[in-house]
Image (cartoon, rainbow, N blue to C red; front, side, top):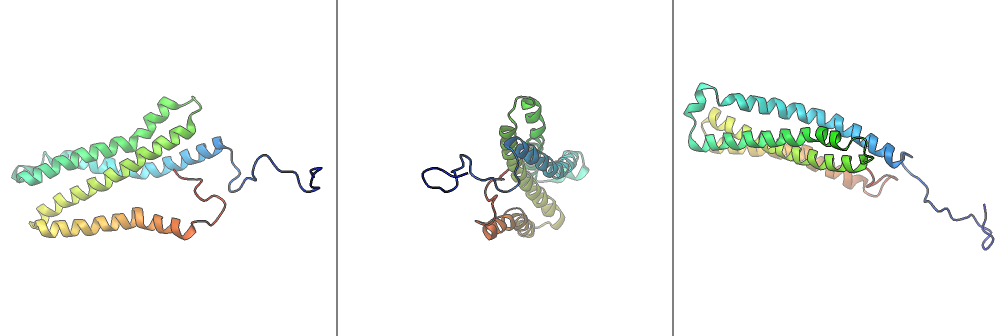
Length: 181
């Protein structure tokens, strides 16, 4: 089609579609399904860790812990509970918003909760590891050093590698920035 003024192609009111060629609803459905698959892994890990933490208080050696270690245990259990709550929250979020044509808002809100849940899970693992290593090694310094190393590994796997991938591909491909969880 040509315009009478220029003889060239008519301007399209919509820019050309790139990437997956999916509607906003299809995109929200896809992102929701992908997020649920990711959350299943994190939920299982947080629930197993939290269940184990709940049993520690009933073990005979718990009575021998000092005040610092007991405080660290309480902090660890609370963070485990918070992580479990955040990582299972997308289910109730979905139940409350289902059928109301709010899938994009659901996906965005649930993604935020999952991010918070993953942060809390990392902190729970960190404090549980610190507590365990303090008891196992008898050295606060050794326990802190090993825990710091493990948390650096978490940071590398969970943050540094994804950020590097984003930087490597920044500006490449038609979908850049369109598929944030």
